[in-house]
Image (cartoon, rainbow, N blue to C red; front, side, top):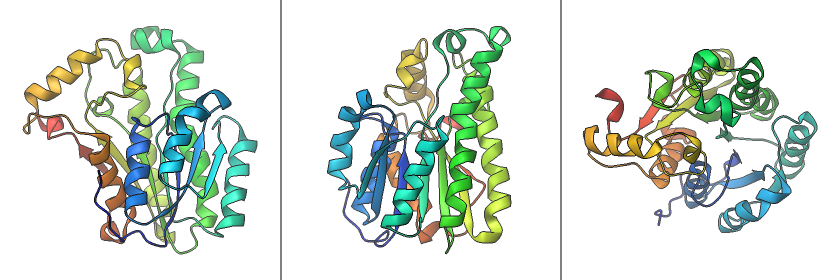
Length: 257
């Protein structure tokens, strides 16, 4: 259970990427809510709605709408709804990634052109599309967050093509931070250690990554989605008003060994 606080009271935020109660974005949404923020949550399809709805209810979401980030009309509809309800946006978290299964499980050198294009579009360019719409709504500044992984920086067994994709995501974060900085919009990435989420279950031999993190991390423990959420709440708050273009690791120190 996250402690209640008030350091996000009055803030309006969009959470994109909640898959179910155990996803990283769900942990972030709970932390934002516990800190007093008003939230908009999205779900990808009608099939996934039933898994996301309990999270939306728990955080008392003001807005709960479908959002397939490959559909510009759906993106526009979500931002129109926030504009009508709130008139502004203070923060956005982008916690989505996808790669076709065959390309995800194969070698980088064997990745298909189509699979690479899909992975980059959904996992990286979608952040750009959301940031473009968020920019004019962040009239008093704001924060944009995305979610990466250490495979962006080092070669991780079985992470395969998602390593280059996450590297592109982190580079995009830095460029957006520079471009949006004059408007006091901060852009950061979070890099959690391995977590037992639905997205992670698609990675081959994921249990080995879990075991390695427990063994080698200085704290000898796994992080949790609530700990990631606590970091996210700090990063979107005024406590982090000088932090931008950064990748924040929440992994028990695993990235340093």
